[in-house]
Length: 166
Image 1 (cartoon, helix red, strand yellow):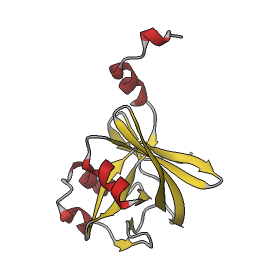
Image 2: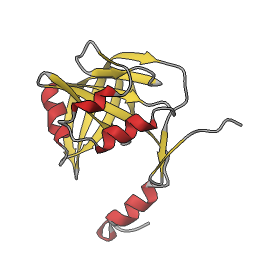
Image 3: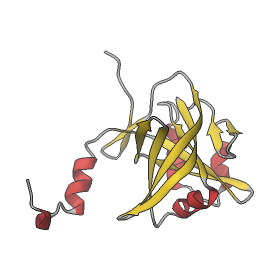
Image 4: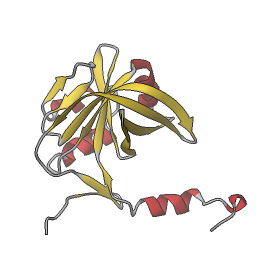
């Protein structure tokens, strides 16, 4: 084990994390009189009592501050058939409203967009937001959810992946 003075380098950490399989989600939120969103893989369950998700977004992304301002967001965990939507939301400027032209989108009770066909959707209210290094970490209290059949889209080593049943 390394001593605190011999901290793990950013490159070592990134290399190790590329070997971890992550679910792929599009995190969406209302902004002004429109919708915005971005593809996120730094996301997980925090607690079940109360139901809470953790979402981490780089501080230099406009989405970080806009989610904080909105106070709500939705997490749309993508199916393995929605890789095109993941790509679109990972490379589309926030002001390109065409991102929502793909897939079937509805507005949730929170005002955040929900994607039809996503394997699970969680509507959240921001319970807490705090900075941790290069990211803004959101704790989202789950106020609504939907579940659909399908297999999750996964991410590892810079590629989208699918599960194979044995």
